[in-house]
Amino acid sequence: MPIDPHRLLVLRAVHRTGSVQAAATALHLTASGVSQHLTRLEVEARIPLLDRTQRGGGRTVRLTEAGLALAQRADDVAVALAEAQREVDRLREGTAGSVRIGGFATALGQLVVPTLKQLAITDAALQVQVIEVGAREGVNLLRAGDLDLLIGEQYTESTTPAPAPYPGLIEIELYREAFRIVLPELWATPGSIEELLAGTWVTSASHQPPRQMLDRLCSRYAVTPGQQHICFESQTMFALVAAGLGAAIVPDLTLAYLSTEGVTIYASAVDVGTRILTVTGSRREHLAPAPQRFLAALQEVIGRTTTSGITG
Figure 1 (spheres, rainbow, N blue to C red):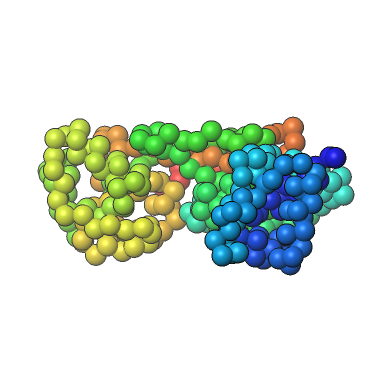
Figure 2: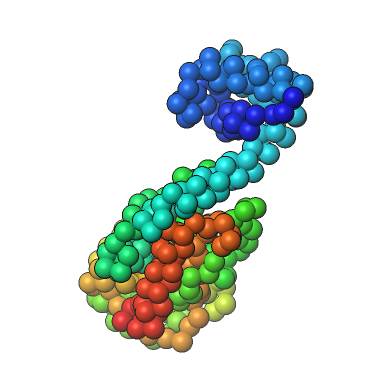
């Protein structure tokens, strides 16, 4: 008996959420409806998919080895169904079309917003939805068909290698930008990079690029850094720098996006690091016309921006 691909997606939801009730909520079904789909799927597969000896009081659900294998295969089914839906949308939309673009705040503010302003003049029929989202959640939305394009970032000096794109997805490099050292305007210019590194810093958690870049610079110049303030948001980092509480390492795009009042760039030839901005979507031959049009406009805006200089 053939396996119903939609029931595979139900199994996938149960595996991801860990329970029938949570999967029912995510899929907008009843718990009994989810259970019926799972029972029918076991009949179709002719093998147990749920480990009913490990039900945890009837709330949590564990899958058998066969269930886990099918749940993982369901990711490919979700991608295929999403691509089919995009193809249907492409045929139905004609010259209108819609695109859902996700990404982190700075990229949306500095790159997507100017692109939307341009499209309002050059391609007003294109409807664009902007979704601010983290990298991991963004990939999940992309694979599930809830995003068409996702702007992400990589770092050439990162100690963590960038993951390979999932099957069916392609990652396109948009452009590369440099990191800068910024100082409080209240400070006197440091006499040397060693003196600066030994001072107070506003940085990030140890697994984040600004901290990793600072650690590499300190290692390169054999300096032990001074006190460090730890931040998660660029706005907080800039506020501390402007208040004279430390130096920081930030990329050009952030410099252009946030107010730099009270902040100055440290003029030196020190190579701090590089960030690569990317956009991920379906492979070009499967990418619907609307996302292709948006991507072309985005690349045009970035081309103009990098030619004129982001921080200029």
